[in-house]
Length: 246
Ligand SMILES: Cc1cc2nc3c(=O)[nH]c(=O)nc-3n(C[C@H](O)[C@H](O)[C@H](O)COP(=O)(O)OP(=O)(O)OC[C@H]3O[C@@H](n4cnc5c(N)ncnc54)[C@H](O)[C@@H]3O)c2cc1C
Image (cartoon, rainbow, N blue to C red; front, side):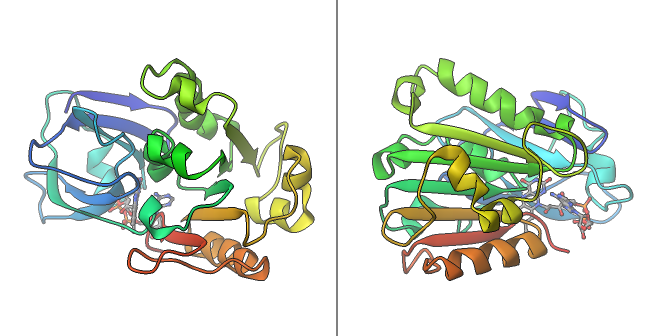
């Protein structure tokens, strides 16, 4: 373990040395566990760092009594993380056909922390909109720090200039933008706020990552706006991935 940072009593990030043989695509996940656990528990974790990074970053929930995270949240620099190094996932650029705008609809932001640093994302789409829905304002900080750091990023800072938008929303306390991601789409407010026409299959592509309920509602909205779901072997106009198993 190289670095651990706690954001709230529910969220933290950690960085580990990247196993040399590990190759992954932006947006994929691996299985993480801990050594010496009473029983071996592995859980899916989206890689939140870019593919060229010498370290791997993960952004994690802390579930009270969660079989993995009740222990993982106590991890310290120098401790060991176990990893099943078989990256996979559907939130990959390969599963989308090219378009004008890429909407990243997230309550689970980790895969987008990686994808938003992929130069190919900006080759494939003119504009990338990272939406991030949280319950409380302090849960937005990881995404806010990420977006601020992008501007200074020597590899893609110039590339993303003026082409990437950050749209955080909060549901349970006052914030400049309030409401669920799905409510904002339904009301059309998101599109008005950003000066875009309503979402449609010609120009818009979407990646969705959140709870089962969030996925279902957002997926239904994409379908009702005429977008088709894609997969690795059949690229189309939107893709979905669970942020956790309910
Ligand atoms: C494809 C995929 C990618 C994932 N990527 C990440 C990731 O990058 N970061 C991460 O923290 N988790 C991620 N998860 C969830 C992760 O696998 C574990 O569920 C989480 O680490 C908690 O593990 P646990 O054993 O402590 O509790 P679990 O027994 O796994 O979960 C207990 C309960 O906690 C809630 N829960 C679990 N994970 C979350 C979460 N992320 N957000 C909100 N509520 C949650 C759910 O209600 C769940 O039923 C991902 C899951 C999937 C399927």
